[in-house]
Length: 91
Image 1 (cartoon, rainbow, N blue to C red):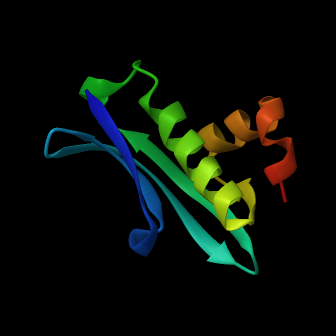
Image 2 (cartoon, rainbow, N blue to C red):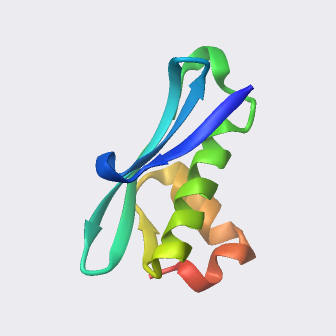
């Protein structure tokens, strides 16, 4: 089972399969906005929805922290802009 965690000190959400890191979604913080700049999943784990889970986790944490989101990562940008559940988070 894949475990997706927010690692605030590293400014990312990371996915683990046991002790092995299999994906990450990283962001930078600037003036109350988190900008997702990279989302990646190990090739052997692609197609399992892990990238979406990573973006979802960053969005959940942003909402809890009362900050806005934007993305320069093309995948995260598409997820955020197409999902109505993220409308309140978009910067």
